[in-house]
Image (cartoon, rainbow, N blue to C red; front, top):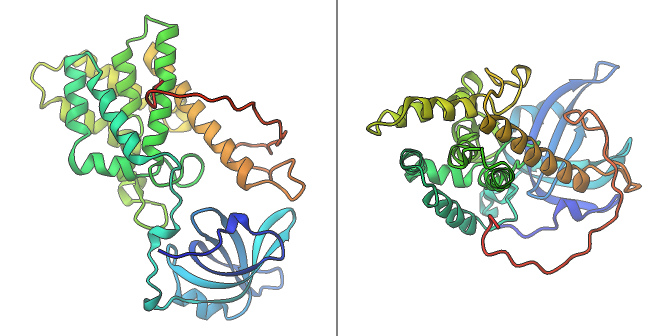
Length: 331
């Protein structure tokens, strides 16, 4: 495990003498047709852009995405965005005892606590068939992968243990909606929340730089999850066909619109509730992360966020902190 100052704590002019992971590595040309490297370098706290103009071909042929390198330079600012001005860029020594896992962002929540509460939530299901199905799916290596995986590459919950954190948030939102609207089938909705992004354990690679797998690109997490439900439900004698279809529908429709990647739009109470819960969890997490990492030097506005189609305002009005003790993550 390495000990070094986190990038997020450095200010403009501070020196960089760090081991960093290559998050993006592109060969580009200036208007004068001179080649340079556009690179994103990061530790577990932040990822910053850097441009390299010297020894371009040698560096480009020597390194790749996901590799850890030794970088020397300084924190700079370009058009309101923090970046690294690189002075030197080189390979690490095997004696440095560096692991790529030291550079992967991780959830601030306790993974063991999230695991325990998730298993308790499965046990609380009252529908025999749905409870049996969830126990079959969330088991063994699949469950361990679910506990580890990020929920995305970068936009929301893009860190180790991000998938179970995101799932916990949605379960809590869905439980609240069931309290407000008792006509919603709670077990069906909660199982939809548990399964909606489960396919990301196969859609994403997360043993290094977060990237999409071939299967993820060809099939996608929505279909992966739906196929798994169909496959495992067949192994449970007497599993009601309509119950299975309604659960699969929640998964297929959870991105809300055809243009967002769902093959069908929500057509049941449970599916519309899940779609909105997913949106709320994802957007709040993404905006919160942007407000902490994308602020311009004046500290009021973020850079323009393409995925949000806007910039965000940091009002600085902090909530009054009151002591609150929850019995579980779901309270």
